Image 1 (cartoon, rainbow, N blue to C red):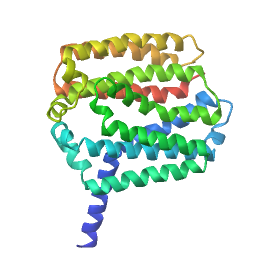
Image 2: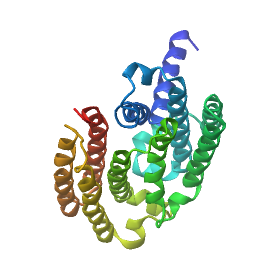
Image 3: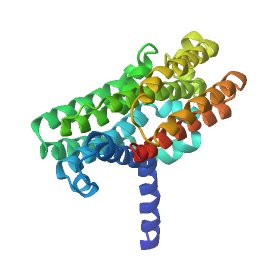
Length: 293
């Protein structure tokens, strides 16, 4: 095999690995943790102090490593249904063999524990437990309709809690923010279940759309959007600065998306709605910069 072909194969595999570990989501995770640290949890520290905080860096790195491992093991167990729901992404994310995926999964988790050990023993316990929780979710929890969506949203938010522990600051604004995002993540996850109905049904996953049908699932999503007004009301009582505009505009947009959810029932529309909520969440992350400005 020529050097050029080896180089091409390397770059193709690297691209496959980045897709497998959801490289874009990992970047957003790290960015969000630093924004929360600087603008919400430790606003009195300068940006330089936050960026060059070695222990914070280790916590963020460990979070990214465990999350990457989580995406890999989730992809490993979902291979059969992804082949039905996302055939193109399936091909890209399976450039690595299943054996290679498992090796990478264990290496990433081991690296996360080693990195966490440079912070404290409590950090080791946290990330060890977090890794096991993700594995348990991927192995069997996600097949249980009554807990899968709630667990998925909780696991996404859990790494941000470690930042509050690091700075020993349980800011109430952060909990209001987390509650709002938790409800958005639940909506996104339920829409994803609607989108993946065929593959889930073929692989006998017990999701809400399969157990109760599409209309009851849409009713639950509607209820979650109604419930989102409570953390929203709490947050708007706080001195958020220009950040309040994000909440003023994001909530009405959710109702517009809800309208399309009820009157469009194709896989393409579900994918569009799923990505729209992801975009709202991403804008919410970037909007942290405007808090108290």
